[in-house]
Length: 200
Image 1 (cartoon, helix red, strand yellow):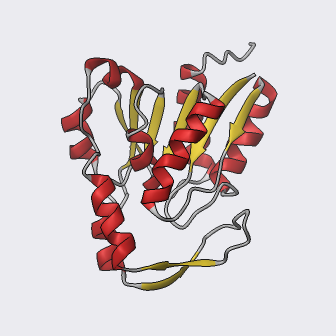
Image 2: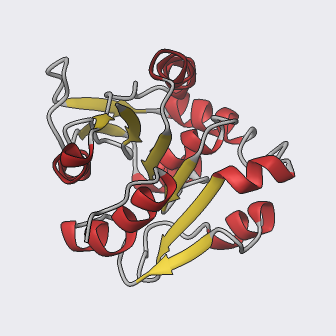
């Protein structure tokens, strides 16, 4: 059985609509979709994600927004970064402090979390490792997909500067994904990279 590791965005969880869609769409092809709840604090998130990749040995990592920022740093794995946010510290600084609700249910039952100066500082620190140490081999492993109407995050130039345009593509969509975007733009690339062939 092949394994796909999905990494959700900020304030999300492994029970997001994207994770559910991927599970349903890939089940018939024998693909196990794993979508853990990522710890809120970056200092805990990166060690957690490294451990997940060691345990699961995913054939492919698909990640969105904040999750894609983390996934970019998981070197050596085949990855699809959808609307990656390499500027979380700046977004949170302008987004306001205080308690924020999770968009989806979390396994630990948590309903909200706190954005404070410490959390922003951790994101600023982890972002120092973004888009660094990229070899030609890494460029072959990373694909970037960007919504042309994304008004929340725009890291297209950063991605192309680091990885080139060979694995860069845009789609007619916004920052958050829906089933239509997943079906038309994301799922075909997943099937291609995982060598999933649909019988005629």
